[in-house]
Every structure is written in C-alpha cells, then in structure tokens.
Image (cartoon, rainbow, N blue to C red; front, side, top):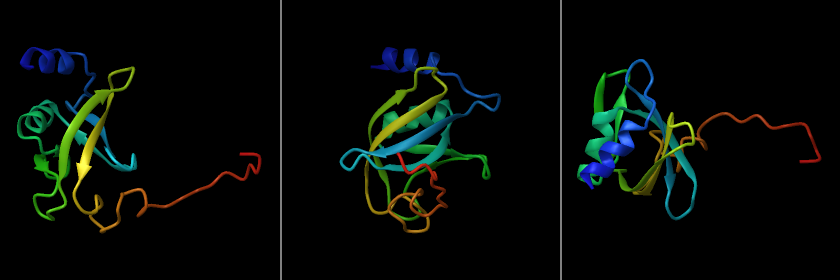
Length: 119
C-alpha cells in the first residue's frame, strides 16, 4: 500500500503553496459536502488514521474534520481528477458537514440559477 500511496501523491499537482483542492462527497447520498485544501501531510494522515484531515490556510495547520464539532468524516476513498490538480474524497459523514450545522456547505451558501427554461 505504501508504494501505491507514494505513486498516487507523486502524480498530484499541488499549487505553489503545496496545496490541492479537496472535495468531500458522502458515500451514501452522493451529496457534495464541502471543499477544503489538503497538503501531502494531510493526505498521508487521512490514509493513516482513517479520519479525513485537511489543511487550514488561515491557521496554517492541519485539522481533522470533526475534532471540535464531533461531526467527523471517515475516509473511504480518494481519487484525483484527470489533471491531478484536485481531489474527490468519498467519506462516511457523521452529523452535518458544514460549520453552520447545514448538512452540506453548499446548502448554506448562495445560489444563482440559469434563466434558460429549456434546461
């Protein structure tokens, strides 16, 4: 497994700050839960512990989802997109994913719809 992890990480395209976008998706509902950032250390800690860990740009530190709220994410699978510059993390979500207590961060955000009625 260690060789597979190293090979996976080697193919990723981290930004100039050593970060990559990470989108969390619920295993059961398929809902997009949230977007955050990861660095190599966060990816390795996620795989090692089984609890999804992100990188906080504001705190300049790792944080494991749910460590304060109890609404954690159990790691199921991680995959990169075709360019290797973003990640999709499949998780088992415990409780709401958003810090506002919404089920997903996208339910708590703003919405803009198309005026195209043929869609």
